[in-house]
Image (tube, rainbow, N blue to C red; front, side, top):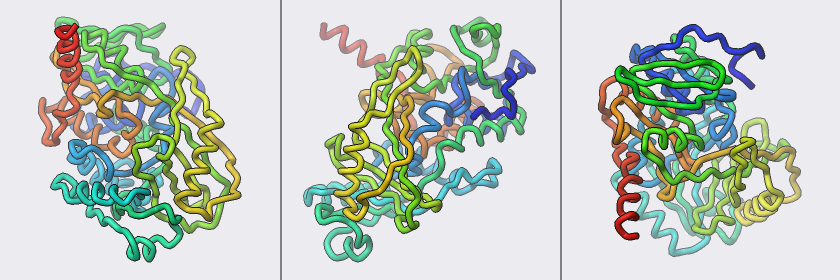
Length: 395
C-alpha cells in the first residue's frame, strides 16, 4: 500500500534539493530520514510504491550472526538504531529481539561456528555455541539431525512490510519530499550538480545524488560508467495458519547447500513465516516474479528436519519479490569512484533488512560530512572496476 492516503498522484512541491535519492526501498527511505536529521533538503523519487520490492517482501530477519565479518561494524551500528524504535520514527516495526539460532547438521560445522563466534568482529553479538546436552536442554524440540548451533541473544525479527513506509513517513514529517510513481529515465552530472530526468514528470536537480534503486541500481550506475555484475532473484516466502505461540527464537540452517537453507520465525499472532531453499528468476520488464511450488515442498521438508513436530500445518499464503545479488555477496555502498557528489547503496544480496537503519545513517553521514566512522571500504563500487580491468588484460 502506498504511504499516501489517496490514490491521487503525489504532488511535487519542489524540483531542487541538496540531495536526490533514486529508489524508495528501506535504504532510500532511511537515508531520507537521516539526511533530514542532518539538515539537508531531500527529494526521494520512487517509480512504484515505497518498499514495494526487496524491502517489503523479505523474511524480516534482524540478524547479525552469519554475516561476513566485514559487515558487522555496519550491522552493529544498525542494531543500535533498531533499539531506538519507536522513539526514532514513531513506529516499532514489530521489532522483537527474540534471539536467533543458527543450527547445523555436520559435527565439523560446530568448529566453524565457534571460530566465527571467537572473531573479534563478532564480539558484540555475544554468541553462544551449543551442542550435545546443552543444545537439547535449551532447544528440546530440535530434531535428531541437528548436532549443534550458534545462538545470538540480541538478534530478532521485525515486519518488513512496515519498515520502508514508516521511515518514509518519518522523513516526510521531517521535511523530505517523498514522491511515488516517478520513473527515472536518465541521471547525469552537470556543471553544478546532477540532473535527474523522469518519464512524464520533468527533471529534478540536486547538488548530490544517492542511488538506492535495488535490483535496478546497476542500470543507473552504468550511466555513470560504473557497471556492476548485479543479478536479480526472487525470494520464496510462505506463511502458515496461526498456531500456539511457542517458537520464540528465529531459526535458520547453516549449510552450503541452497536447498537446505531454510529459515523460519513465529510471530505473536501465531503464524510461522518460512523462507529459503530456492530463488526464482524475475521478469525485469514486467517487474514481476512468481512463487514456485517446488519452493514450498522444499521448505516444508527442511523445516521438519529442524523441528519434526512441525508437520501437517497449512500454508495460507506465499509470495516473492525482486532482490539483487552480487558475485561476492556484498553490497555496493559508498561514494562513486568516477563522479564527485555521487553515492550508491544497493545490491544487498537478500540480507539488507537488518542493515536498513544503519545504511541510512551512514549514507547521511557520508553525504553531509564526506566521511563515515563505520567501516564500509569492502563495499566500494571500485572493486568491480578492478575486476573488469583484470578481465580485459587476461583476454
